[in-house]
Image 1 (cartoon, helix red, strand yellow):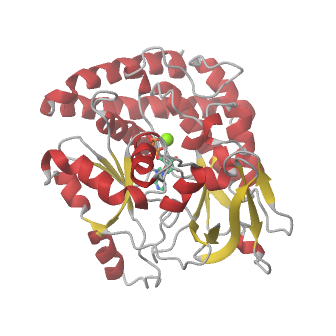
Image 2 (cartoon, protein in one colour; image 1 turned 45 degrees about the horizontal axis):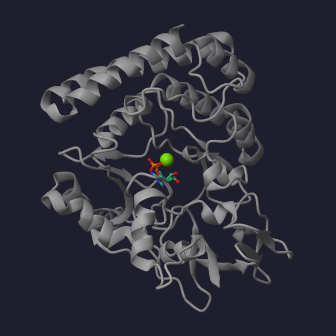
Image 3 (tube, protein in one colour; image 1 turned 180 degrees about the horizontal axis):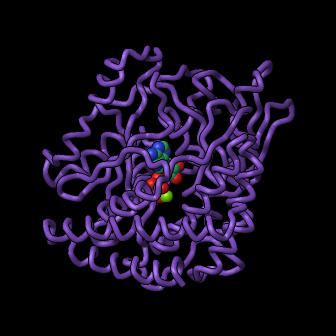
Amino acid sequence: MIKVWTDAAEAGLLDRYGERGSTFAYLPDTPAARAVSVTMPVRLPSWSVPFGLLPIFEMNLPEGVLRERLRLAFAKATGAFDEFDLLSVVGRSQVGRLRYTGDKEQLHEDVPFQSVDEILEHRRGGGLFRYLLEKFASFSGISGVQPKILVRDENAFAEMENTGHRLSQSYKGATHIVKLWEANEYPQLAANEYFCLTVARKCGLDVPPFRLAEDGMALVIDRFDLRMDGTYRGFEDFCALNARRTDEKYRGSYETSVMKRFAQFANSTHVNEDLDRLFILIALNCALRNGDAHLKNFGIVYDDVQGEGRLAPIYDLVTTSVYLAKDSLALTLNGSTKWPMAKELKKLGETRAGGTPAKIRQTLERIDEAIQATTKEVRSYMKEHQEFAGIGRRMLQEWEIGVRTSLRG
Ligand SMILES: Nc1ncnc2c1ncn2[C@@H]1O[C@H](COP(=O)(O)OP(=O)(O)O)[C@@H](O)[C@H]1O
Ligand SMILES: [Mg+2]
């Protein structure tokens, strides 16, 4: 049995159910503010699924390399290791405000310290990747296929104390996400993402601070769900909001599964402003030729599960078409996964984000300008980093096509 915590307080119990399913029930007298999701208000009846975990509990389970590593390390003698086992391993340290422990255990987050500067300056040489995965895998309740870990930066901790903010007693959680990549599959992925996020920031979107390691081997990103006092905000991705399982992340449309769903759960006076941002983000994904903008790559953040939800800051932007030449949209737009023409994006902006034609035109121009400005930075990085030259050249080609067809058209 697993105990589920929200905002460091007990909320309910989760257990296996039936042959392969699970069930969750709130503890008696749990206040409404302790609900585990905007989609699951506190109630007496339990919530059950016949297979795996409910979407909100499955949301941060590692996929890919990290999951395989944890399976190898924690599988029992029988070799069995399912989602329930995985959640028991990474449950104490998670993105967002939910935590998981054994039913009789107290919550101890206690992520070990790691110098982020050491990662950025690559002082550990070639073994860094393996060292980090070994040390932090079991503290990394974070989804995604690419290898990544959650770390607690020793300096971030000091900085926060210096700002005079009172740190919560329980402040022992991770502060940063370190994204690594596998050379034979996605070369130069960190630099690729670094420049895509740079474009997003130049478009005026809210992007958390991000830094590229000197040798291009890692991208380090500040957690956007961490508050100044060391506690965490609520975060839910659009798989959870659509009640979909992780393996359904490529199912749905930008119109309904993202924009309409956002408006449904935002419960916010800023909904129009955020729909504007979502539109910019979707158009940006098209221009950058990011074919991986699926349901887990958008999210909402909130301070109060019953209060206002805002569009989460931007994350996971990559020009995927440099690795997969035939890549296309991750979700449908206007019924198709083909890269859209500018006129289709204009229609999306006018019908779903309520923009006037003039405003939508300005938005697309702004993205265009941000890409042109970043192109210069990519070129100068290519000169100093020969190993990036090939991928860099292809990224710029893809951006050029993206801008020409999806923004200018
Ligand atoms: N800056 C951040 N702060 C908090 N959570 C984040 C941040 N960036 C990403 N996440 C969470 O981590 C997950 C994995 O990160 P992502 O960048 O999407 O990795 P991948 O490239 O493997 O998909 C996201 O789906 C989101 O839930
Ligand atoms: Mg992702």
